[in-house]
Image (cartoon, rainbow, N blue to C red; front, side, top):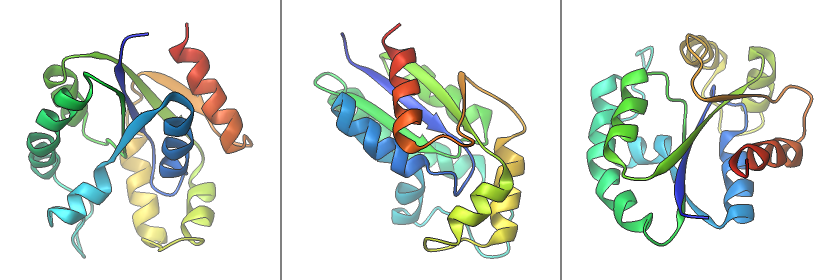
Length: 163
């Protein structure tokens, strides 16, 4: 199968990074973690803010799109993040020259809060805020992750790619 990219979106604390890592091992893909890139470029969440502005994500896109367009010639790509701005998704779809899949991972806010407490926490309020933002719209294929383990989620994603 020709190379493609996957946008893996969902609320903070729901396990996107874990799923992206497992999925990348299964399909031999490189992962771009949007939050890590935002932080590295000092464009991430600022204390007291409710969310990261769209312009910050578009700045990240300017940095990663040329790299992705080069790498996708030889490998699959996973772009993992919250993606609570539709325009961010549209920018990637418009500027990455390849077949793509979008998956929205869904779970309840309680699960996200619980999982966030087991890592370097961003705090309950931020988890609730981001969950609300991400949940404002669905994009692509919806994957309900509630009561599923990570292997089941990855298997479900792969089943959609192979159709």
